[in-house]
Length: 112
Image 1 (cartoon, rainbow, N blue to C red):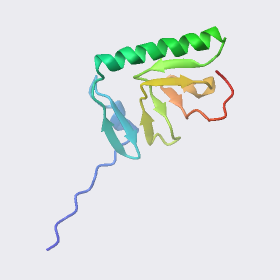
Image 2 (image 1 turned 45 degrees about the horizontal axis):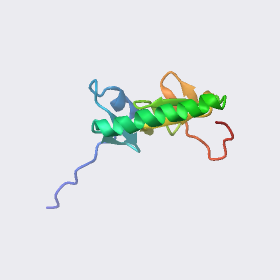
Image 3 (image 1 turned 30 degrees about the vertical axis):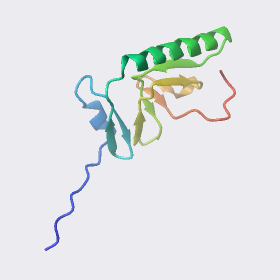
Image 4 (image 1 turned 135 degrees about the vertical axis):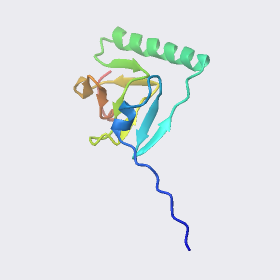
């Protein structure tokens, strides 16, 4: 008799939305990847970069927005790729909505 194969669970964006308060995970092609809390050093570096990039944009009269994690980035129209990068720089305001950012930065985008 052949043993039964275990089936992997396929997760959706609804599973992300129903995570317990304080839990963080990313969704990539039906798999959840849980994230550990960041260290103090990590947060120090993130804070420095957030300020430096934000100040650079402001000093150059740019329109881009800078968001530290947690900030939702949906990389696919079907919500199968949901990420929370440490730092997101959004150059196209049309990609922003109340949930976060839909889509990714294109390499040839001219804006700051």
